[in-house]
Image 1 (cartoon, rainbow, N blue to C red):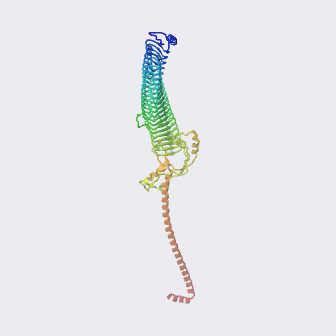
Image 2: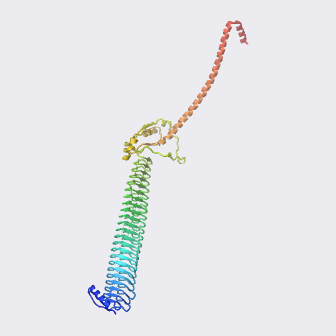
Image 3: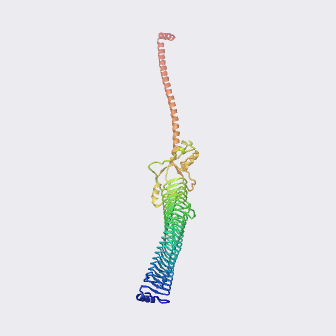
Length: 596
């Protein structure tokens, strides 16, 4: 037996509940209780354990069971197979016909629901336009307001998921979170206005006030923090963690930004990794960058060009912070940076290390290069020349196309084998035999000397650190052997000899003279050759003289023999004269003998 109560207005709810408890227990043969004009008016036999309170509440219910309707036209269209629903509020669940196991609480909550089941809508207008959507939870005024067929969604917060229509399996929590989402699925949006404009994007996670605010069709993004991924529209596979990280990303993809404002203005850059507050903050359209550290690479590609600012790796506090359009740079160390904004293919490693032009390398604390093609290796090493190399603590190189080892305190440079210089005749031209020998060598002044190391360091702009002071003092005591470069230069000029063994500075006010002692082998070789030629000539002269002497010796022997013979003849004549005086007869005999 059913009991109906009509036209009751402004009756305290607590009073009504007291009456229903009595009426239901005393008179309800089928366990139904209704109160209000038209409330449960069409319940027939087979409709059990229903409660309808309010004008037209559960009006069309016939054989449905276990429904609770409270409010004007709450559950109005509930019919035969719609059971186990709880609708509380003005027109709550009004159009539900076959939907079951729903709980709608709030004016207009679930108003348009027809066959949707197992939904929970709590709040004014919550799930208002849901028709066939199932397994949804909408809590908050207008939460899930426009959802029609979307299923398995959770909308929590005023207007959370308000625009969702057919999107499924979304979790949207916070005031206006996912407000505009229509078809997006499998998204998690938590925080005030997070994912506000999401429309069709799937598999996104946005947690924080306005995180992913402008997400449209983007997918597989993760935004954690206030305003993270704020302007992402159709970007995908981005990760942003930290306030305003990847704030202005639009269509970018595969970016990772962790830290306050990391990758803030990444715009359409792709495959970038930013770790640290402000890391890559102003990156615009650059790709393949890795910036780790506070404000590292923060100004890369402000020119908004897809051809600039790509492939850089900066690690450290403000490392590479001034880079703008440079590509393929590697920088590591606190304040390690490019001293110009558009440099490419550089390497700078070490706190305060820097490079000034493209294709340069600086490695070491405060190591620096100024021009392209240069390399500085060592703490405080400075190379200002082009295509030059400086290696060693505090080494300075100011000339172009030079290689320098050590500093003013260095006393020895060595190795196991000698240097090999390229000397392939296939690549030489204008070959001339115009090297002076003895004329050059004989004018050289070999000297020994000691270095004024303090003056040299001052001239080169080097500061001798405390730990090298002893080495510096020891070097002052070493006596070296060599030449004076200016003297060698003067001698070479006097012979019109363009001698490559003297390093003549372009600016003697800031650069030093040097000598390449190995180059002296060439004029020394020429001098030896000249000496060898003279020796050969002297040998020929000596041989001729020896022959002359030999000839003279033979002649002397002949003369000596002749003289000896003459002497003998003379002696015989003397003897004969003596005898002739003594013996006239003998004289006559001699006369006769001579006549014959």
